[in-house]
Image (cartoon, rainbow, N blue to C red; front, side, top):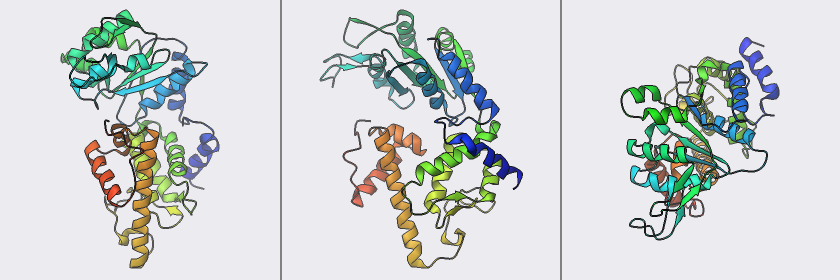
Length: 346
């Protein structure tokens, strides 16, 4: 057994018994800090590169903060148009603006008694930052079109992949809001800095996305080595996407480094010549059909998990919302129904 396989074998002994993967000492220390922070209701800012798992830390804090079920609400500040974000955060009364045909509670209200995560807080419009600061200072919120104050008891978490101190220096983020939000700052290291998490995470994704397939898939020794050595510029999100790619392109029970796109000869689109063994045209068609079916089912599963929210589904897939709409349209043309899953308003 080589060094990489030994590390993989040791790490996998307990990886699947935990909801959160933390085998690297850096990750273990991070989750320990998150659990300590959860004991105190103070604003926490979670920073790190894109795809490092900032929302996983947010959920970990939430789960350790409450002894009983409590609401957890997440808002991506970068994914909502600026003219809608204020209404979504603070809520609105019927008639507050054109199109407001009924009253709607905001995300702060929905998170009352629980946790609100403001993801991509660095993209919050400057004009809205002052209104957020006032809500935090007064611990009350007013819906648009109303003068009634609603008392809040919300644990606020924020996440960003930007250097907010630099944003403050450039005049793009309010300094007073920055200090209000960053009472505690948890920084998530990139995946390349916590390599003992790579293979357990890969195995978790392999089990998650290969359920229902006839063959029990595994990674080749070379694939394990390549994953362990790769720099992962896209972090955990890239790892997840590459494992999905390997599952879709696999024709046997072993996923190679080539199928993950991690060998020197890999290209974005793998042809039949790149597959482990030559296959006849009829089998190639079946492989492609299996791949499309697996991809469609995966998209449907993500839509269900995100309650029809196309923005969140597209983010999970690593594509734009527009690209997801085209893919859904293509699926409908193939006779795959998405009507019960898709929320056309998001």
